[in-house]
Image (spheres, rainbow, N blue to C red):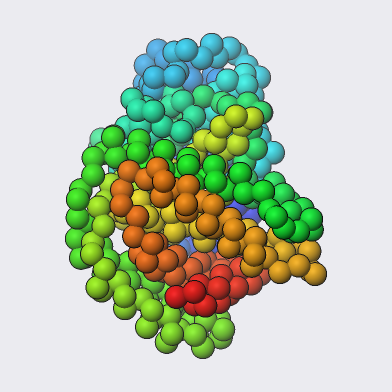
Length: 399
């Protein structure tokens, strides 16, 4: 695969950067690792998957043991659900969803999530789901992972395996359409879906506390770190968005409150919890995609943090969901729906949370998260700026 094919793929993170070389970093069973080097001195590693690659054949071969290749080997690490899945020779399909990784469903039983951008060392998602496998967690059953082990012993997860959950609804488009319909009908709004989102977030955090434990005090350095990240985001995004630049002094003033709040308990968290990470079935919600915030380095995504960061991220997403839905109903303001959805999710979470909930801290973390949302919009999706702009306005009105 040439660099042109990489450049058009959603999972390629080097768009807009000058590429100086694409080299081989190992290969086995038809899969290839490729190192992309940039003119600015940076480098990234990607998984190249040939067209028509049959994952069931690879899994069948890996059940017998590692597969040797050039400069390393592929290994299967079994999860509890794998042996119960009767995978045949089979039928495989790619779900009709837009993803930054590659998803394949085998025999309607097993989901393979192939990571396209690779990072050596512990994989945050595999690590969390391995730990949760022995606990009552609202996640699809964990079936294992596939790893590339280089000749020097370096370990890189290239794919996650989970039991496929049929009849589900996930993603962004479905919720936007449902909220747009609700705005068209007007109040009173049905908040059952967002109450359930708060409940499942609390259930997830309870399972994470069981699996990883709870450190009573995260330390003042955590609060300082969140404030520093938010202020850095203000600096970066404010140069690219005049609206944010104008209100940045007021935002910085609000963020100073992080210096006087008691440090909260910390554990492992989801790290990027939003509406598209909730898998809806007829009778349950499941949480997916535990890679963490993709713009943060791996070490940061694996650190213990407050579960309230996940809560703040979810609430910001509800605000953005309302703004996105309102754009499809130009005659309707979403503020009342956003307030109701936020209250439903937060109240449901508070009633079941395994950690104390400081609502002032939640709001401050929402503010920090909104600052970071501007960076994403300015750098990658300028047409999305309307959402953090409206969200920041609403936050500043209530603080």
